[in-house]
Image (cartoon, rainbow, N blue to C red; front, side, top):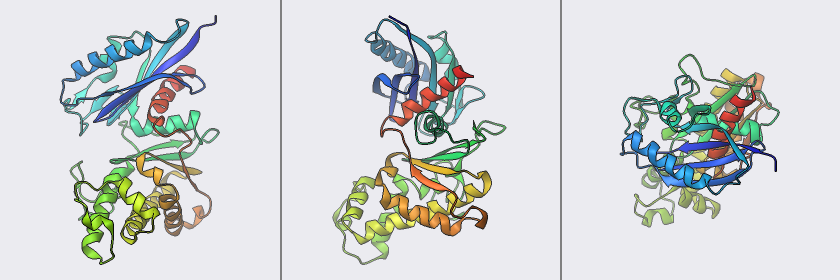
Length: 321
């Protein structure tokens, strides 16, 4: 029986870490999710991760060959193999994460920001196949972005280019976890949507089930469900989110000239409730040379699978060079 080449894709989050073994066609052969426990020492986390990886690996067909490991993580530096100043991971200023993984595996290891990994996954396995200029915007607890220009991921001189989520919407606006005020991700994200809805409850008189809910219990999913039912507060919250997102996407288009922008992450699951108004607002704010030329689309990767596939795409791209 021929040997099957696979890679390991790892997605590290502040709450959970997921990993999966992925073949060259983008099929996830096996996968698992585990608690990150970000307060643990990073060495303990990597030891625990290695143990779980090997547990899953023992169930794989004996004729497989593990060729490399790709990792998506917050504040990961592709050039250095490090995770630096990650807000939700109490691992210190700089951690040589790729180096820690290499203590267990003598194969190529590569790491990048989770949104960069999503862009690579979109290019290899999703709706960006065949494109050389596009963006992926991940809408979750925060807002991440990956930018591909002329077929190559944009890293910049220090490895941290494309931080669209930390461009400023309002310099006197909402406090961001990065330390600045008014960052895009404080408005255009799942948490930003909730903050907008809570503010609207105090500013408007429209009846809404949101008024009877504990503010700490309200989620973006609840707001989406109410928006589908025509709730005025929920619909206005989505509209305001779309306006701010569309405005900043128009700015990004002027700088990078993509042929398409893909939305992924939990908030993107709102579909047309978010996508259609964002497209319209983006068109309104676009520099005239780009009007009508940039497609706004949802990610082509299966929900819940994009992070693992993105991390796998990172290392497949390295191996295919």
